[in-house]
Length: 317
Image (cartoon, rainbow, N blue to C red):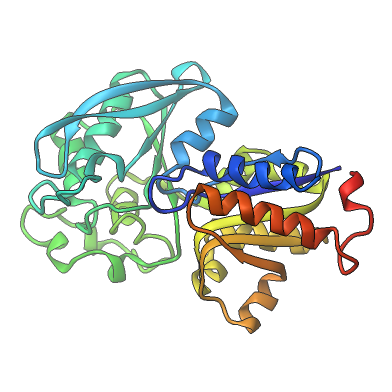
């Protein structure tokens, strides 16, 4: 049995795979057997890398509207021989200059069109992350101007439970701002993902909205790997009450608790009180920011796990 290390990405361009590798190095340096590294994501940024690494496939690129409205090259994934595409909605709008209100979520819509043109029958949209809060108006307009979906089915991964009305700006429903999107019954959890992009795509094109964390964990075969582990290490840039509302850290901890597998956390910032920590049933919570601190935290966790309060003989597994 191995220790399962299942972190998401940290702020500062620390990809989930890099976080997992750093924690793993610390665990091994302290005497544990090599852990099972299982990078995860919540349906936002980092989802493309996690799923492509696990499922295989290839990358493609398209020229789409960037944060300043000018074209930029953005990558997307092709799985199952190109029948399924995966796009990250935040990718076109990321950048130090910030999103241009005129561009909105247009780049995300153009990425979906690029996936359609590549032959995809299903496009999985990771809607979470830093996407302009225009209710999906820019994406909808881009798709309609590009000839529509042409039979492509949309599956939208949502990174939280925020409803559309909370996340999307009121002007998203104004002239040129998504048409009748707000006239649809959107008072549902997760429709606000991506600044309302999830709800907009659901209303305009009948997109299938799914919890991103659960989708990713199922795709990386998390449950089977967890049941084969003697403990799980979760990780994220910040641990707070949002972990109780469907984020990937909370989803990992909940599944571990239900399976009777001890869960521990290494996070950038811990803002969770003791009561909420008990709800998640996290045994140890350590903090770390950069790669060196993550390695050190992995070593410290290994030493704690070797103590008498934890599973006897953990170092021999």
